[in-house]
Image (cartoon, rainbow, N blue to C red; front, side, top):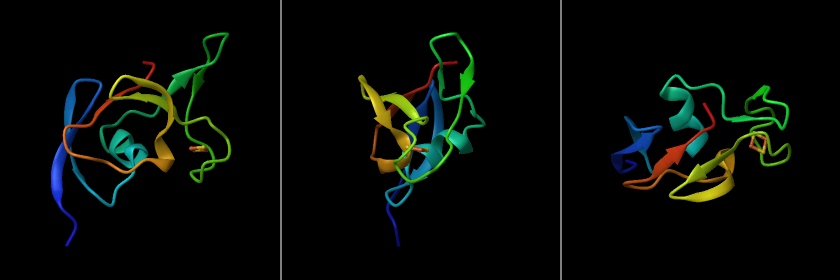
Length: 82
Ligand code: FES
């Protein structure tokens, strides 16, 4: 059974497990805008498999992390462009 804990998405606690991606935790939080384009348009995950780079967020202070490729970890802090 996967280990359960919580992560933080834009300051809100979200229940997560170690087999979930950060993208799954973001979507569970109700957030669908992950970043903004240079012109300010809302961008969201497209491929879900590490190809499009549209799911980039800040995780534990590290920018441009592809959230669909990173598994949740205890005390993970995820920030999107709101
Ligand atoms: S959703 Fe395409 S790289 Fe993550």
